[in-house]
Length: 270
Picture 1 (spheres, helix red, strand yellow):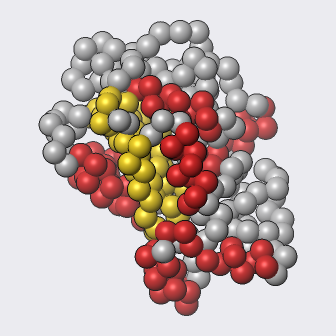
Picture 2 (tube, rainbow, N blue to C red; picture 1 turned 30 degrees about the vertical axis):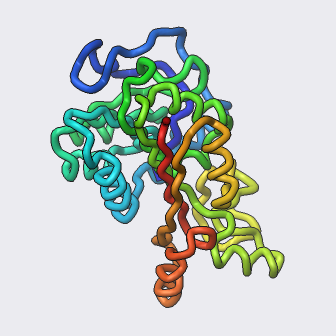
Picture 3 (cartoon, rainbow, N blue to C red; picture 1 turned 180 degrees about the vertical axis):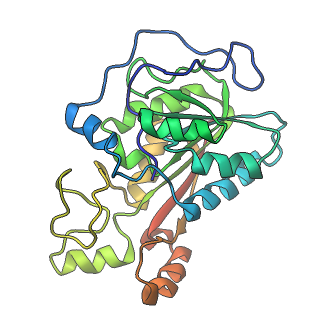
């Protein structure tokens, strides 16, 4: 998972005004820092900042489909880019386009810069993303929305910076994943859900992920529609941490997005 884009002053200048496929950055006062507990959590070096190879390749393929027919160079914003591993895969497999990574974690962005990526330390909280209105062709939110305090404002910002016809590519864990349905029936806390930033309680697993919101397919579609997006399509993807004997089952459930481990959404700005 990438660390979330929440807030903070940029530590690298945004792309210059009028540079290819970026448009000019917006101006405004610095965004407020996230709450202390969240700030400390995401700057903890023990918290993974990488999306992992499965998620990186998955998003690269989704991006290629979204860019089909889009003239280059297109502007792609990767919100919550973390250490840039996924963005680097996207750059390699979608040449000719400009990818800009945004994140709050300074340590994660330092890793992303080592990969040669264009990165900005910025947030989706007021005053919002440091990009002009209708300046992006694609916005990526890979395993990010579940970490945000204010999902509505974040999606409003994404809608603002997207050009008409631009796409939001979003992935998030599914609260109604096939195994979660069974766990809840047995009185077990669902996988992906959190009750604490300090430890895992009542559910399988050992890694605290910092998830603040969880979505079903229906809730995700309704939220995106309410924020003005159209042509929302959702597919399913497998979860890399499913025990090996159960992976064929998890793969089979990808055909039923409502019960798949991961929700992959593409939403278009009309």
